[in-house]
Image 1 (cartoon, rainbow, N blue to C red):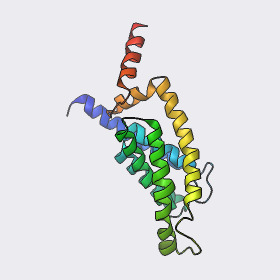
Image 2 (cartoon, helix red, strand yellow):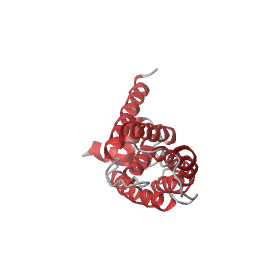
Image 3 (cartoon, helix red, strand yellow):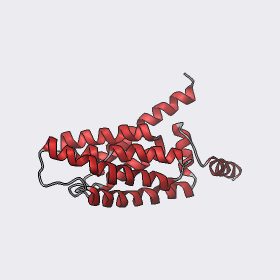
Image 4 (cartoon, rainbow, N blue to C red):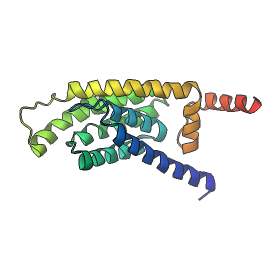
Amino acid sequence: MSKPKSNAAVLRMVMLSMLIAIGVVISPILRVEGMCPMAHLINITCSVFLGPWYSLLCATMIGIIRMLFMGIPPLALTGAVFGAFLSGLLYRVSGGKIIFAVLGEVIGTGIIGAIVSYPVMTYIVGRTGLTWMFYVPSFIGGTLIGGTIAFLFLKALTKNHMLGKIQAALGVNVYDRKKNESATKSEATA
């Protein structure tokens, strides 16, 4: 294996580990039952930095850690994994449009994850009085808050040409290559 590919692989694992750790630590911030906006911030950021499979792994690990050590119900998984994967998938399919990463999170978590949460919480956890749409309003609210923060953060990284540099260093698809190359050339001449 060549050295640049090896370095990128190590850097991807380090980035994934950091995002998992940050996700676990910041998840209690602004958290109410069924709404965890900071998890959506991490999901979208991981999707854009690393892609859908890493984002799915990140959301799964954060959910498992939160369930084991924080006593969070299975909503930690159902409210994260669908949006994380769909966020990364729509980001790639759209050719690197950040708004599509946010939309993937809103659709994946706010709708799909919320609906999947009903049978999990009813039949596995034993909560009563729920309906199929019970979690949709709070999940969509959480994804909109976390998605807005992620969008602003990633747009700021794009504006100062850091997003492309981060993606290039991680060895993933860089969708803003022209801007990234022109920024690198202007820095080299300065």
